[in-house]
Image (cartoon, rainbow, N blue to C red; front, side):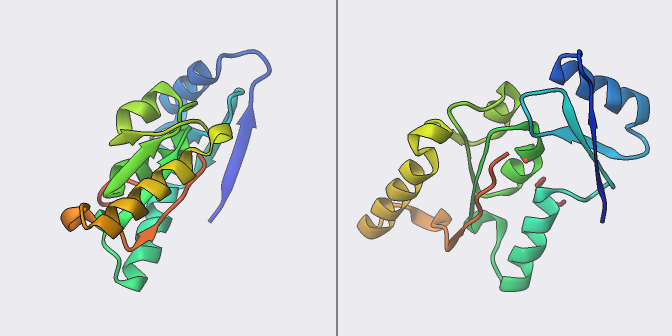
Length: 146
């Protein structure tokens, strides 16, 4: 596996990502995890989603049992793969759209807020069939079938 990084000193980060995908999207996967114009380039199928899915499959954990957190476009595949997903309060707009829920920002303990809520629900027996066994936590971005 290999990940390359490319940076542009002037372009808007979303514009740079769009240009990269339009120019070479048939040759590699492009995403970003930085608020600057820094893009990540990797092979197709290499993502947080595919890695998390592989780790879960090896342990007998289904996607529905996974809770994922993200804030940048490189988290989107992982958030759509996980049974429950949360966009951080400071998340990119595309991440907010992809996630099934939202929490407070990174600096406001957003992950801890959700975990405390899930633990309280589990103790009260109110989480139903989607009760997670493990939590997958990503800072920045899998699809149902990676």
